Length: 313
Image (cartoon, rainbow, N blue to C red):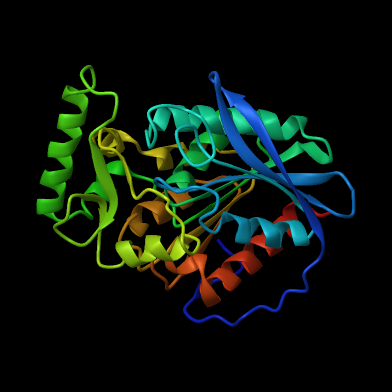
């Protein structure tokens, strides 16, 4: 049970910004290089470290810095990374979204965080959003000694998420996915599928709010690709990281968006009840709302309060 209740309206939280330092770092993951930012509080004190990565096809410049700055201003360190094949990390082909590889990247990012100077390596918290909200549940259940987990608008069940696609979109995505798999031996560049589109479009997220929602996360004048290798369309349907919830023994905070059209909230709420030390907060918000504006302010305020209660400085 969450101490915050269900939130239908929010107020803007005024933040007094404190100084912090951000360093460019990298770590190895299965022979490739994962680029990351390491945020350290200027206090110089050894701090718990929050490991962060984005959702479906996203990279760290798509508003993860906004979250990390808030946590670091409160005295927490953050390691924010791009998966292999995305952003500033290495890996060919580009835009290859492999669930197995991303979970390996999470494991290796945790090991990197534990070795970073200026952090308390015994207190690693994994933070995920959307697709990575599922990854961190799986990571907290399988990687030893994770201290805490924060997940927001989480992807928890692939079969349920696939039902959010209109039938025409589902058929088009499946056709592209099979084409990508069948031509893998013949092509260096994968057959691609759009991440976001309107209902009926061949896209992994084909909802009314998906196109505008993803575009709002991108920095102005950026050229971040909006597509990934289509083969992931087959893998997503069998990926259900929410089933790991009952095996998570550390404190967990889950923020669920009741108007989520991308990741069905009913499954998230169900899995949330299986967390041993879990708190589930319900927002009367849509999937992309919590990255910006008042819902962003409410989200980080609740997350910081949770951090202070479970990992006081």
